Structures are given as C-alpha cells and as structure tokens.
Length: 239
Image (cartoon, rainbow, N blue to C red; front, top):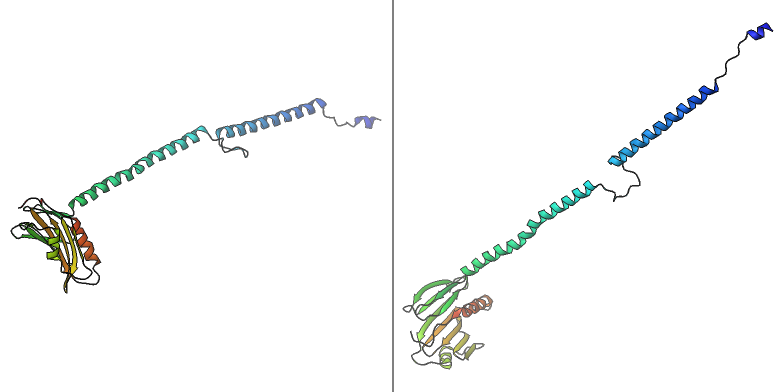
C-alpha cells in the first residue's frame, strides 16, 4: 500500500481563516453603509439635497429673511408712488385756480360804478358817452352789447322803463320786478334782451342785440352769462 500512502490529499481550508474573511467583509460593508449614510445626512443638512417628503414650510431662515426684505423693499418703493396722486391734484388745482383768475375779464365803469364780466369770445370796446357806457361785440354770434348808465332825473320807476322799452312783440317777455326790468323781444331784423337796474339817483342798463334766427340757443346762453355778470353800481346817487 506504498503507492496509496505516497498520494497527498489536498489540505482543507482552516476554519479559522474562513471566519476571519467573513468578519472583514462585514466590517467593510458596515463602514461603507455608515459612510454613505453620513454623506447623505451631510447633503440633506446643507440643503444640497431635498428629501422627497420634505414640507414646503421647512425653508431656511435665510430664505424667509430675504423674502421679507424683498417685500419690505417693494413696500418702500410703492410709498413714493402712492404719494404722487395727492401731489398731482394740488398742482392741478393751482393751475386751474390761475386759469379761473385769468377769466373772465372784468370791466368796472369809473363813472357809474357798474361792473361787467366779459365772457370768452367777446371783445371789450372803447367807452362811449363820455365814459358812461361801453360796447362789447362777439363776431361769431354777431352779437352787440351796449351797457350804459344815466342819471334818473325824471324819477322813472320800473313800470315806466318797461313801457318805454317794450315794443309789444308776440312771444316776448316783459317783466318789472321791484327796481329791475327784464325784457326779451324782437323785430323784423333782431332779437333783443334788456336788463335794467333802477334807482332813485341813477339807472344802469344793458341791451343785447343779435340777428333774428330760428336756432338761437347759443345766443341765449351768451345773453344769460352777460346778464348774470352785470352788477349795478350805486343807484342811490347821481353821477
């Protein structure tokens, strides 16, 4: 059996070495897992990686502070723009005030003291009758306005003035109201308005005349402005 004893059997691996290899592999796996976990935690904490289940409220303090700063800066930028509308009406009011002061032109008669507003479109002419009267004209409306003052030497009252001026035309207006006479009338060529203020010392009278026509709405508006702007002087005194 010499040949049989000369054959060497393969040596079996020692159990001790096999157990050590498993231990080393486990240790390496644990180290790798810990390293990966640590890296993941680091990325999440620094904000470089967001977890899929993270809530929108979990924003960093720097982000909320920056958004608050941007909103406050936006509010500060809006404040000047909100103050501008309050300043604009003031300038507009001042400009409109200056325009209102510039018109209408006001005429004051030095002799009889009556006052007359000159509406837009009317031209103030020279004084007549030694300063007792003045003439206004409007070429667009073909309107002539004669304003005058005279002393009431005959002690005329409103009824007497009405009777002397009214021509009795149909659809006319003729009224005597206290110390004032108002007349609208016409003839074959013209329409007339009379506005007369009567006092014991003097009389102030306005006569408005323009061509007779079917559509006289613009002329009526102008006549109303003229009569409203006619203020008598001291009617108790003669001049």
